[in-house]
Length: 210
Image (cartoon, rainbow, N blue to C red):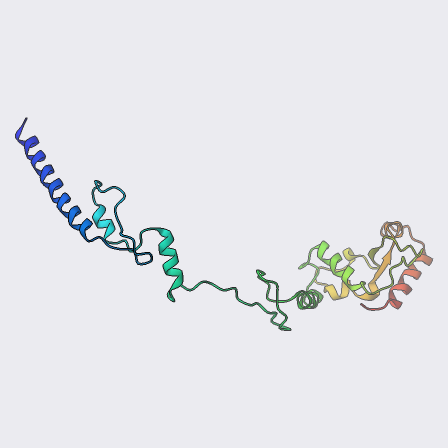
């Protein structure tokens, strides 16, 4: 056995003896949990550095830490904030991220859509807005009187309007009419006669506003 090995063995034995004294001193008066009062003991007393970790611990488990922190005023539980509509003060549904109720949102969206241009809206948005504009009209085809399935038709096609045209102009009530699928397709393909076209224009002019 060399001199270096013997010296290391002596140092190791001295360290273990010192650690044993510190361990015995701590076990005589250990720290106690702030929640349940149980002594905070190491799970592996033979592990190195366990005393340094125990000096920082205040609870015996995570459950005690959560119970203690939730019961104090320093960590209050979060409560759901009551959300109301910014326009009419109507109470909104719990968990929603909206700032407006459904009625105020539809009014605001419709008003905003009227002053947007053709290029700012997609074709689907333009047609959805047109359907909302004729919602209060009599549900029947302007040509044949069919009532089961109807479509909104533009007397002046959307493609004829420039990109700077407002949605209020494109979807004006005088430019919208309800048709059945057959007459809608005939009108879009240019197969409708002059009498039918005149009938459509008079129906759109006399239509009631929503």
